[in-house]
Amino acid sequence: MTIPGVSHSAMNRIEVITSVERRRRWSRAEKERWVGALEEPGAVAAEIARAAGVDRSLLYRWRQQLAASREAPCFVPVAIADAAPERVAELSPSSAITIEFSGGVRLKVEGAPDVGTLTRVIDALSRAERRR
Image: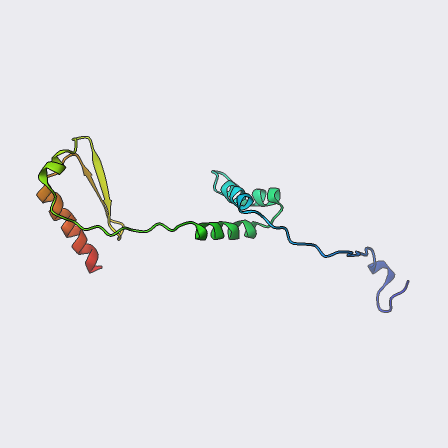
């Protein structure tokens, strides 16, 4: 067959599409498995995508979707009240607590601190935080 304007040598291959390709539906479990593989140490996204039969960008989109669907962490309001000295004295010398303020400031308290000192330090850090 001759098509006007097309040389015979340009027609090396003809593709006949007989049906509509359907999109693959991935279950949440499958998406979580592939996204979990992305988070493994030394994981290579291109290799994981090739094994899953998808494009890398789809793996990243799944990761975003799954992260958005998880319950987001939130901060619980805390009120600083007068501490009973006997409660603080219950801490052993080897115990430690860490208090993290919203500006990224961390206060690590080791052992059994003096209640008055600890109260003043927390109060000072809280005031500094409000000034920002």
